[in-house]
Length: 352
Length: 194
Image (tube, rainbow over all chains, first blue to last red):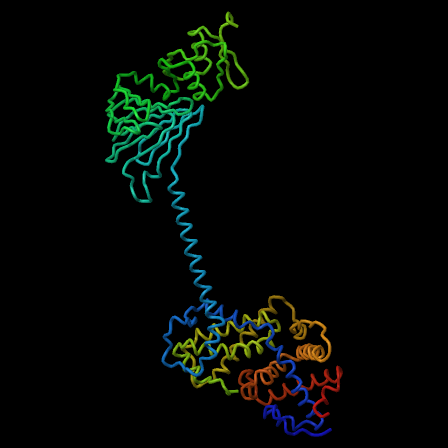
């Protein structure tokens, strides 16, 4: 076996060391050393320098030599920047784009969250008294509102247009009937109904503005104490001052309210004491009120003639539905009977 | 090996927080350090983590680098410490004293290709399998010397042993490989002479 003493690839130390080995061993080991060259390609299998660089730049963003910077330290060796440029082109720029994208996405998300939060915040607060129930609510300014059965009241959160920005008015929107005790305040307190505006600064008054079943809707305002302004939606200039013990009605959004008339406020506010009152109302309207008040179905049989004929009732204190129906039927010479969900009113036996 | 890699200059610029020096160093040294770490830890994933960690640490300690010391050796020593720490933690965690050879990187079996290519791939597989059979120190010294091109003095510095021991590790490694190659295909050893 020919000797190969000249083994240029071997490190000098190893070469010297191999001289201690027998000749053929020396040659074999040199051959092994050379053969290992075949394994070199795979030595770095699994290396991911780009991923590592991205991680480094994420951790230390100052390492990202972005081209826009351009302020290389004076010590930079220009001749040795070729590999750097390559690296920049390969890793740094994508990494930078990545981080910019992340930033943009983060900002977009934050904006969305903010907008979403504001949107949620701007949703009106709704207070409801379902049929058969009554509910007292305290408003952000300390005013209290008693809602009669089947009433919805909405207002802006905290009476603010935006967080920490006070609205010009303390405005509530009413569909149904409610009694207001308005706390004194510099800002006007305004009740908006389907067709009217009722504005005050501090007083007690009742607003009845039911849209369900009454078409066109009407708004009845009865003032207990203080003074309120009542105006039709489309005639704000034709407002009417209503004082304690008086009532006014807006029948149409384009027609000025009726002049204030003295009224029995107790009748109007009977509902607040779980009583019931009706003043010269058609039977059909009274029955609607009863249904709402007691969350029952009261059917008017076709045998009943003159269902629109007015009727008056007044119960100042708690009363149950059947008592009212009994009185009502007696007054009108009608009969009633229970059904699965409530009652039916029908004409007295003579006409059946 | 200080050929085209100006470690002294890199060290000086790195101390001044020159990020382009850092990038150049990364470009030049990521592969070699990865190879070395992998010879200790076995799996590529771990090697990737450890190597990355070395570079993170390098940037953190750039101020305190000493121009009198070899930056290259410093990097290797950092890599070595971290790799062994990782191995130690790994072992304590799994509570098993696995033999080194069992943690040998499982080289993917290459698709069967005809002729010399298939044969070369197969040889590569075998070589790595046999390298995996070496002791940790033998493999370390061999990889540093053969693949990373470190001088024996440098290898000795990194491994904290004498150059003579480096030689012994390498010679023993070569002898072990020779035995395997001889069993596998003796002609390979004589290829040069024929």
